Image 1: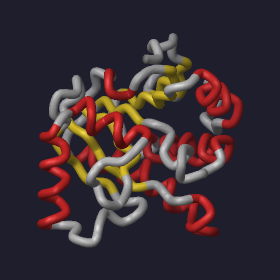
Image 2: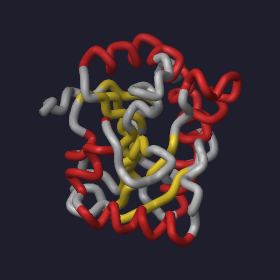
Image 3: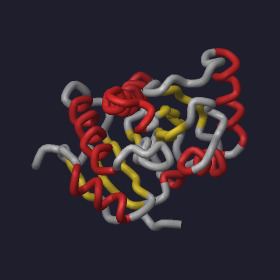
Image 4: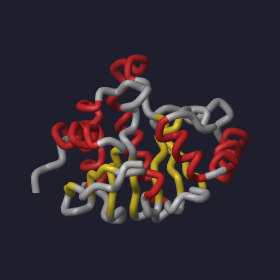
Length: 188
């Protein structure tokens, strides 16, 4: 397991970039980089389902049965229990597959962050931890994803004061370093 690093902060301390295990974050909500099926998978998705236990899968199965029979659309976000995670809730969002999304990739990745933050605000979840959405098997270049994520969060915070902390949690130091080199957060 990766230890939590000393965070780098942005936007007056409302955003923290750190290395750690997203399943161990004590926040109101963790964001799951889910696949459209909502039924678990590899990477962050699998880790969240394994650590959170069967309650997350049961909630996702109910969402598939009642609201998303064809799967959660890319860029959308939905809320479930966090099961055994230290977080209270899980926000599931489906990032774009980089090559398949074509010119829509940036807008879809932006929507993942925006819709996840909007859902958190709607449910009064003031602290949120994100993984690096779409940068694993979905192939989104980490450098480009850093710019998209930081821009989406900055834009959301320009009109929102309810979310007090967003953690961008990277499992590997190398990924955090790439983000820190390519983010677009304004200088303090």
